[in-house]
Image (cartoon, rainbow, N blue to C red; front, side):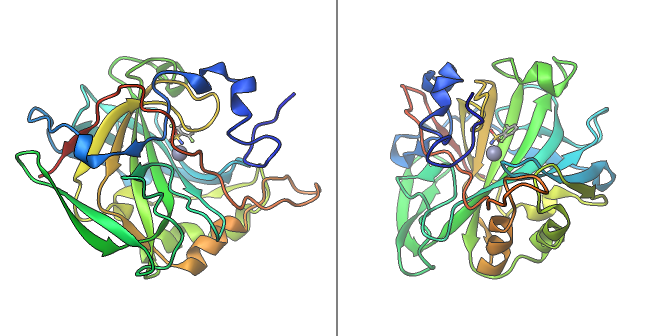
Length: 290
Ligand SMILES: NS(=O)(=O)c1c(F)cccc1F
Ligand SMILES: [Zn+2]
């Protein structure tokens, strides 16, 4: 049977063989076409409120590296924005590309935030004004990575696993990582990757507030989508932040040194772990700027 991954023989183009919802009507990621995004005045700011003692462990599950949080009570939550109710922080994780391709899963106006060094590639800086028009100015950019902050609807469901099967069960905040200065906050994570190189390894990781990885502006786009990894469940309210945070290439290289194989197996490096953009199928995307 297919053990899904990101290689030629088990990557995103094969996932539908085991998870038919891969061809569903609300799959993620998508390419956010900003000019078609429709401003919704009813949408409010998002409000992350995290307690650093919720952080428990950092692990390598063979597909990514994640920091897992204690979600037994409403200690670290996300409210506001498009969300009705309180969504509890479950984990954060990353997606990245190999050195020659982009790693951010969502794209903005076709920019996979390709891997070019800043300045080599025109990128559109998208300003969605408060009355909803989109202005475009060109900047250099280059994000090869994305951070996902995963929450579940604890008002309506009793566990992450149950919420992950519901259309409004999960809320994931996506933050683009752009090649540039080394990120001192991200260093707390990249410095621990040596301890969890093999699939299945985990290490204590506490006293960490993931807000330290968020950009200054919490302007975002929001739309209804899915997990971007199998089982690709269509249960995610996506909140894609417009402003990236920085990561330096040395930090990025540490993610690529993780193994998708367990200790004692022939080593294979987790060089990329992103799913390409999926069809929009008529969905509306709402920009939200403060
Ligand atoms: N990539 S994603 O954010 O869709 C995601 C995962 F990778 C894993 C678990 C939950 C989840 F939401
Ligand atoms: Zn993800």
